[in-house]
Length: 201
Image (spheres, helix red, strand yellow):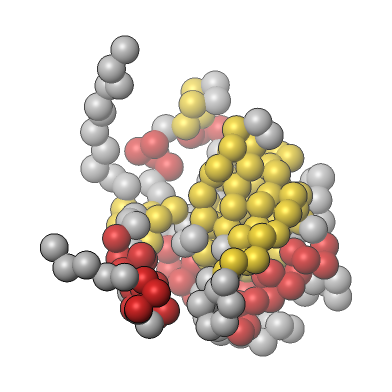
């Protein structure tokens, strides 16, 4: 085993180890709107569900290009955002939305995506995504500093939108959902080889 002491490491190297070992990571495709009315859409693989009551998600812009901070700026201003689930078929559009664009560029247009409006918040959602969450900001926790620091955004889900063909009550068909996960670099995986492992009593 090779041992790495983080305080002795370059931050980029620590990021490479972290993002290469914590895999696959779910992708939070975050939709926001600026106070000026410009839609923004960007994917974040430092993303997850962290509480069930109230249903809470986090995402963290971490060491991203400056233009990707538009998401964080919009959330700070409006205190709302959408989360859109990325499927295998939506992978190319998600990738297109990850580019470094000026703040006045609408990534929905760049990626050729239709917008569906949220109902309880003022944020755009990806119309073709099989599921969307409407989220209100709970808090933002800043961790570390430049160049690889994070701002961890906590959002309460105030509404779920789910394609009814995926549902059995509130159970989601995992095979039909067909989500993708993020690995290191440009690598992704597809969740299409599932298996069961019953938990012990």
